[in-house]
Amino acid sequence: MKILFADDHQLVRMALRCILLEAYPTAEIEEVDNTVDLFKKTIKGKWDIIISDLSFPGQSGLDVLKQIKAHTPKIPVLILSMYPAQEYAIRCITAGSSGYLTKDSIAGELIIAINQILSGRKYLNLEVAEILASSYENKSKANIHENLSDREYQIFKLLIEGTSMQEIAEKLFISINTVRSHKVHIQKKMNLQGDADMIKYGIQHHLD
Image (tube, rainbow, N blue to C red; front, side, top):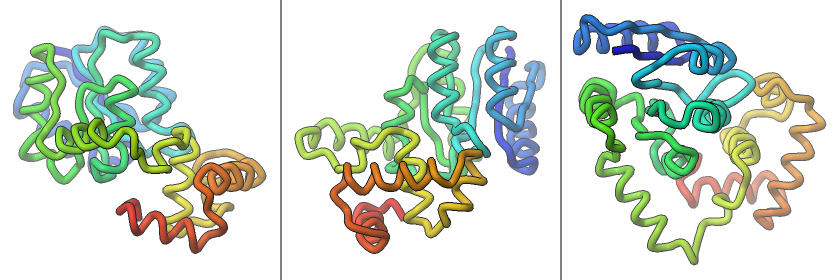
C-alpha cells in the first residue's frame, strides 16, 4: 500500500507516520510539507490514498484538493484539519474529498476512516453526516457565507479571527491590495458594513 500525506507541521507529520506505520507496517509512506510538492508527487506516483491538511502557507489545501481531483480523480483524498467540521467539511466533500476528520480525532478515527475509504466508500462520521444532512434540508435558507468563493471564505475566516490584512497577505503570498479587494467583495456579498459586522456574523454562525 502507498500512502502520501501532507502537513506543514513536523510534529503532526511525525505523529501521523507513527500511527500509519503501526497500522500498516509494510506500507510505503511519503510525506510533504507544502501543496506544490503534494501535487507533484500526486501526479507522479500511484497512491492508494492521500491524506492532507487544509492550512498551508500560500495555496490552501482546498485548492490543491480540487487540482488533485481534476488530474487524478480516482485517488481518494482524506482531509485532516484543525478546523471544526462545520467550517470546511461541506466544501471539502463537495470538492471531492472522501472524508473529513479534525486533528483531535486522529487517534480514534484515522485508521477506521482510511480502511473505509480504501474499501471504496466515503467516510462520514456522525458529526459530518449531520452537517451534510442539515445543509441539504436547509438549502433554501443557506447561510450567506456559503456563497463566498473558497478564497473569499479563507480570507473572511482570517479577518474574523483578527488577522490583519498585512498578515493575511504574507500568509497567503498575495498583495495587500488583493486582500483589500477581497474584503470589499466579501462585505458586499454578505451585506456587512464593517469589521464589527463581520466579527458579529462569525460569532453568530460559530465561525470564530
